[in-house]
Amino acid sequence: MRCLVAGCGYVGSALAAGLAAEGHEAFGLRRRPKGLPEGVQTIAADLCDAATLAAAIPPDLDAVVYAVASDARDPAAYRRAYVEGLVNLLARLPTPGPRVIFTSSTSVYGQDDGSWVDEASPTLPPRETGRILLEAEAALSGSGRDFSILRLGGIYGPGRTRLLETVRDGTARLPAEAGVYTNRIHRDDAARALDHLVKLPSVDPVYLGVDDDPAELSEVLRWMAGRLGVPEPERSAAETAAVTGRGLRTRKRCRNRQLRASGFELRHPTFREGYDAILTAGI
Image 1 (cartoon, rainbow, N blue to C red):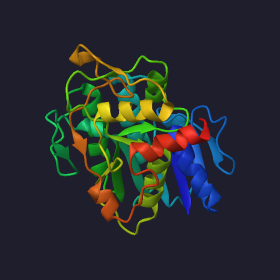
Image 2 (cartoon, one colour):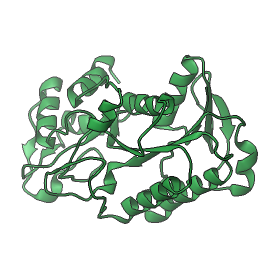
Image 3 (cartoon, one colour):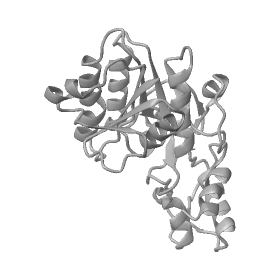
C-alpha cells in the first residue's frame, strides 16, 4: 500500500509510523517535515500553495489521509487548513484515484442537552469553525471520490496531558452542574482508526471517532485525583468554569457504534485505560 498522510502531525505521524512499520509506503506531507518517524518518506509542501503542490504528490497512491490541524482557532486559519488545503489536494489527485479519509471533529454537532449523537444526528455547529469543517466535508463528499470522514472527539495521549496536569497542580475544578461530558479518543486509537478505514474494502461516508465512554467531566477529574494521589478538585462556583481539555464545555454524548460495527477495536476503550497508560509510562 502507498499512503499519503497530508498534515503529518500528532495523529498523522502515529498513523504513518504504523503503516511504515507494517512495510507499507507511507509519505508524510507537511510544511516543516523535520522529526517525522523513521521509515516515513518526507514531503515538504504547503497544502495552500497550489502552484507547488502537484509536483509534491507521489504517483500511484492507494490512499490519502487528510489529517491537518489548524495553526490557530480562528475562522480564517480553519478555512485555510480544512477547506483551501483540501480542495487544492483533491484537484491534484487523479480520478478516480485513491481513497481519501478526512479527519473532522465532533464539534460539528451542536446538541447541548445531554443527548446521544451519532452519524445520523443533525449537524448544527454553534461556532463558525464547526461550520467550516462541514464545508470541508461537503467538498469531499461532492468530489465523486471514494472517501470517508472520521469525526474525532478530543484527542489526548503522550504530550497532551493538560487535564491531568490541572488535577496534579490543583487548578482543576469540578463543574458546578451535572451533564458536562468529555467525548475523547486516545491519539493511538485515532491513528489506528484511520489505518482501519484506509484498509477496509468499503467504507461508510461518516464515522464518529470516540471511545466507549463519554464520561462526565466530574467523574474523569475525580478518577484522575485518585490515580495521582492528590486531593479531589473543588467544585466551581460558576458554570462557565466547567472545562474540558480544550477549554470548551460540551453537553452531548457521542456514540462510536458505527465504527465498532465496522470491526474496529479500541486499545483504550475508556479514559481510564488511556490515562493509566500515560501515567504508567511516565509521559
